[in-house]
Amino acid sequence: MTASRSESVGDAPVTVDRAGLWDAEALSDVAAATFPLACPPDATAEDIDLFIAEVLSGERFGEYLNDPDYTVLKAVAADDIVGYAMLHAGEPADPEVAAAVDLAPVVEISKMYVLPGHHGSGISTALMRAALELAREQGAAGVWLGVNQRNERAQRFYGKHGFRRVGTKTFLVGKQLHHDYVLRLVF
Ligand SMILES: CC(C)(COP(=O)(O)OP(=O)(O)OC[C@H]1O[C@@H](n2cnc3c(N)ncnc32)[C@H](O)[C@@H]1OP(=O)(O)O)[C@@H](O)C(=O)NCCC(=O)NCCS
Figure 1 (tube, rainbow, N blue to C red):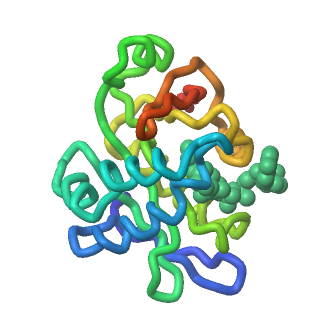
Figure 2: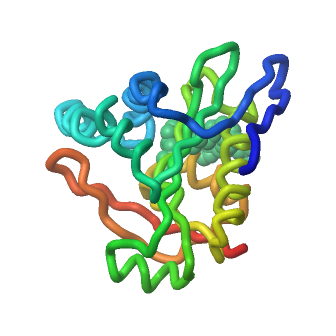
């Protein structure tokens, strides 16, 4: 993604751009508001809060934004961050996921979250397009991601963008193990 992309989504223009260190706290706020939406109904508030504190704090976003292996894209509407995506370059750490994904070089779309008031608005599509463009620019042969097996809305969204199921994995949220599908899109 060489420059920011502006698209008109409904009545409100949305801009998707790389986030910077100064966005860490605002990204953390959006992450805390949206992460629970991706969790299965039996996830406890305690486990979700633990995950948010450990993985989605402003401090952690500062680390992601400083790490060259990560890129955070923000979707901005009316001066507010309303969604974000995070890309992570490199082979999947889990050997079973790496075998299922079977692509090199590969980029993980490790987060894709939009505030609920903006679902179905096209903002997520703008974020996805920008994420795929960036991964292509980075020379990836394709992208992969994990999605909770009970998150049907997200699965449908990824399916519309060409992702196909290649495996399963687990994902620890607090003390509870969640069950994900591994999805892949080959360029
Ligand atoms: C996942 C997310 C980014 C997708 O963005 P979105 O704006 O909701 O996506 P879209 O509206 O373009 O697509 C969702 C599709 O799921 C459908 N859908 C909605 N609710 C659904 C449900 N309960 N079950 C199945 N499909 C559903 C929608 O109708 C739409 O399909 P359509 O375009 O064919 O009508 C957004 O929903 C989100 O941020 N969710 C909460 C966080 C999350 O789950 N992130 C993904 C983590 S892996």
